[in-house]
View (cartoon, rainbow, N blue to C red):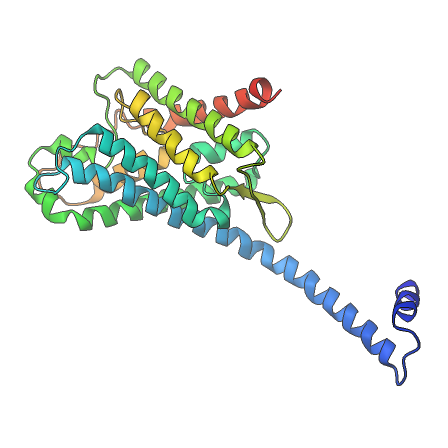
Length: 297
C-alpha cells in the first residue's frame, strides 16, 4: 500500500485537503468491485454460453429439419425439390445458427463437437454436460416449432416413414456396420474441417468468459465455411444414412417424434437410434485428435 501511495504521489504530486488519499481510496474501492464482479460474473458467463447453445441448436433444427419438412411433406411449396435443396438448407442452417450465437458461446451446436474439443484440451470438461443438455433441449424446442409450422402438412402426409424422416435420420440400406462407418466418417471429416478452419488466424476470433477461460471460437468467415463444409458432407457422404453427424440433431427430434400425438405415425426406430449418437461422437473425437497429432504437426 505504501508503494501504491508513493506512485500516486509521484503521478499527481502533493494534493491538498486529502485529495491523494481520496484518489487512493477510489482505486482500492474499484479494485474490490472488479474482484467481486469477476467472481460473480463467471457463473453468469457460463449460463450465457449454455443459453447460446440452446438458442443456436433451436435455430439449427428449425432451419435444418424445416427444409426437410418442406421437401418431404405433402402439399408444401417445396415438395419433391430434392436432395440438393435439403443439403443446402442444412449447410445454411449451420452457418446462420453459428453467426447468431457464436459470439456468446462458440456455437458448438453439436455434442460431437463439444466432446471432441474437450478431448483435444480446447474446452473445459466441466462445461460439457451443460452444453450437451442445452443442445438437446434446443433441438427438441426447434423440432416442436417445425412441427407447429407444418402441422397441416403433417396431417396430409400418409407415409409414416416420410413423417419420421422430418424428425430424425434413417439409412437408405440398413446395415449397422456400414451405417456406423458412414456416420463415423462424416463426423470425422466435420471435425477435421472445423479444426482446420478455426485454427487459421485469418478466420479465428477467441471469446473468453469473465474467468479467463476460452469458451469458443468463431470467425467472420469461419461460420460460413463450416456451413459449406456441412453442405459438402451432405452432398458427398450423406446419401447413405442422411448424415446426422450430430447426436442432438437426431436423438432430440426422435424423442419429440415418440412423444407427439400425430396422424399416420409409425415407431421412432429406436433400434437404429444408437448409431447416429455413438458414431458421430467417436468420429468427432478421432477427427480432432488426428488434426492434433498428424495434420497440425
